[in-house]
Length: 166
Image (cartoon, rainbow, N blue to C red; front, side, top):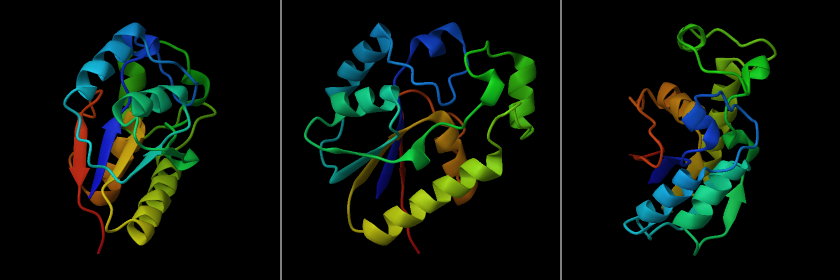
């Protein structure tokens, strides 16, 4: 079993700014929500993989303090190029939903390739383990495309459990 969870809120989320691969910390609200979520969070994971960005690292540290974190660059958010740090607009969201690439950004096939490689590695090496992955909305959407699963919500701190394998 593999469980994905999106990091908690950041100030960029609250201000509606694109983060992409900028290394943004959790907001005070994000820390508070994660601590609250941790009270009822499953404690049966065998291993935790995490994007190396601070917002995912802090989320994982709060939720599964009993596990060492395994950082994997393939779990980083989609690089949004020149849009990183800019205001989220309907126009930009429409372009992203149409798979347009932001100027100097990462295209959908690139993120899907690296996420598929990660999923293959987990399937090959951790098939019989209960795996937690703390990551970003873009990665969760990529997983949905790869596995043909509906994961459109990808809300903060929402658990998405999937069977992986043959």
